[in-house]
Image (cartoon, rainbow, N blue to C red):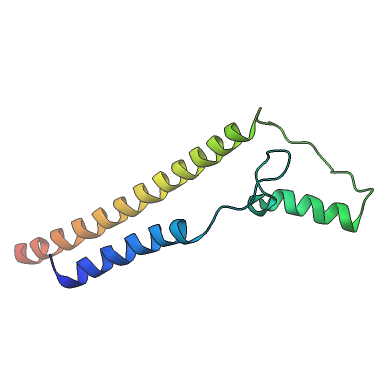
Length: 112
């Protein structure tokens, strides 16, 4: 392998492993719940709205409410995976079309 490729792989591994190794876990709340440090943006937005306008009532309710946080995380991961698959398919299709047009172009010129 080339030195540049090895350096890129080392950088990828370092950027993946170092944050997990260097950051310590936050202290657990007395109730055993996960720390508010990792609360989602939705929770923070709800608290901010509650601080600004305590009597605020939402205009509508969610269509589907998952039974637990684990199911919500699973659905979010599934949504991200489907989106990544669609983007990857489109990107692969675009690259394949570009390569096919480059390959067919010189053959068309030889036929003339």
